[in-house]
Image (cartoon, rainbow, N blue to C red; front, side, top):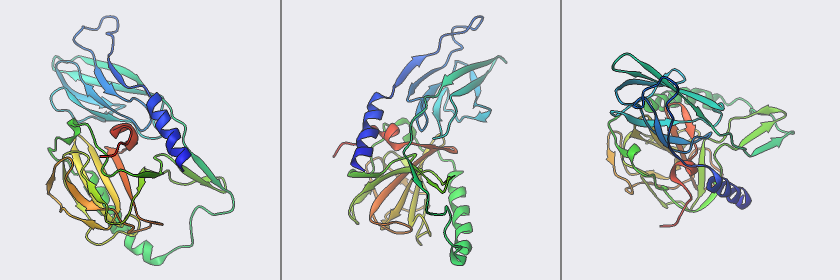
Length: 283
């Protein structure tokens, strides 16, 4: 596992961080250009600055939230190699820009002796649908939180025990990939808000898989999920500040030991916390 973590850090160090302005194409006014900064790769997040006069912005046809001219764009783990931004300007013009999305290599573990799905569990089948409904509702709740403007911090630091994007293949059938980063820590270790936000879900009763699940909206479609907590110290609707203790590490739900699973999403795109928060450093 340490080798995987080291490899991930090396890949992160080698990943390009963009801070650029797209060149106008022939016939395009100089003010009708896009600027962005961040990591344009699978699992990455960029801060986008739309052209002057932009009224609406889309990414491959999906509406992108904006605050004035700036906002965020995230690329899913399985994002294709090319994405198209299209801005509609106040004067009626439409301006498009292609963004090259860098591919990444993911850790794949092949288990040829195990089936993908375990034996059916009637209790799980009864409990899971209402849990998924709560999670889906929380993911679609939008607030005016401004944490998306901040440089994200790690909610807890320790040994990385699970990498974003890792996937198991059962008898040739791919399972779901790991949608966050796991940090192995003792039960009771404080978990801190990585950025300002508003709590959109705080599971008082442990969910079957996620255990005590806490979700925080950071604004502009960006949200965090903290899984397997032993306790949650905030409630739905609470405003949290970067660095504030919001809960404690645990092993609730489906977990083999105490750890923090931190997941990040921009709209429906799952992001790699290691690309958003950068290399982990101890406080």
